[in-house]
Length: 284
Image (cartoon, rainbow, N blue to C red; front, side, top):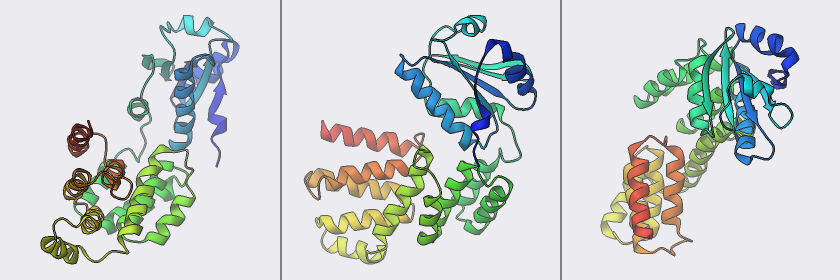
């Protein structure tokens, strides 16, 4: 399903119908941009991707200030790129200057309420308790409600990896465009799980490591096995140890595997900041 109909060029003569009237049905996000300003183009492109990811829960109006500055002046735009979210005929959110995609999501989440708003919180609760069947039921229900919702598709692929259904996860990922940044997490989880599947069990590897604690091959295999069991701190410690022992080992695999693990974790996870600093300290 295409959500191109939710993206339109903002024009002064149709502002009432395209923006004000439409905002009584769903939030309308207006992005002010100009081709000459790369940061504004990046934010416009990010919002266009989010229209599809949010399954049409908001409309996106594109206001090219190089063509017409009157609307920017009317809405008191101070810098490009700029964002105005209009709901029920009123400006409910605004921002001037570049915004990170995570910040755009937070603003949109505030104004795109639906029955699935608690999805992430509920899913997180189930996953934290390793209640995969309950998590799968939640994801499948969400997909039945909104089959084109990219967020639900991504979480479905990620959950399939967690449940060790690697072939099904690969098929699910094939249906998600690589342009969606959130796809990177389940794709990375699948890649690590497929590699780890070829190794001995974690118990066997730990026993081997006790006998030969300097064996980098065993450390690496043990790190990936820990990832599949969500022992991220143990995995990161092992990768850091590999990095410190031999930077050249398998083309710097200690550092690159740490980065792969960071991709599985939320940026807010304290492990990310802690181990990034330790890695940076060692490298510099």
